[in-house]
Length: 293
Image (cartoon, rainbow, N blue to C red):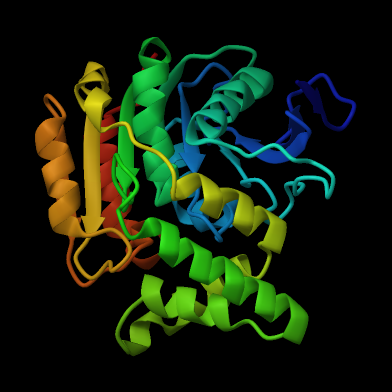
């Protein structure tokens, strides 16, 4: 593992962290009170999105005294894709270990106030609590596909990979359009701007990056370890209209985690931090509390 950034004694906002042949693009952002030892929140984005989905969340956290770390997933936006001759498959444990290593590389320590993840990021947050419970105080998991890959995941992700492959050949972006329609269902005019913004994020995802994470998300099962998440203060959130992560299923997951809380955003799809940034910010800060070490 290595980190590179501009030559300066200050830790720069941007940094590239190399792990297992992947150059992760990362951002470390400081609180508005400029406190360099402020507690840290790690933000993990949805598959086919980018770290930019957290723009509003970062503003909320830094305004309230937190430092934030966010990064692009493998082959997404500014993070490198696996090399063409790279045969390694990435398991959910690998992605969780990578997230943990990014924190250490960017801050010089491994202690976090919270991990906040959406979609696959929400699953990584669950696994983070299981593997690194001594290093994090709080997890907030949004719109995760759950603690176990759904039974239909194999065929579903295979179909999406095939469609993306066809899009690469034809120059179309049918998968991207379908993804946005699924993330923000309905035809509410007030969601047009966030749909357009999110489409811009989606179009930065490479085929290799999509395939790597799709293979990951269709093959994991931590159901027999679910109680271990309860070592960490946990909030599970869902979108009422989310077709990718059923709210009833996520409420059941929360019920099985000792002490976990559950919440649901009405008239909301798969990306509450983008679609409902103010409401999400209030719920997040209410659960996190003040930025104290």
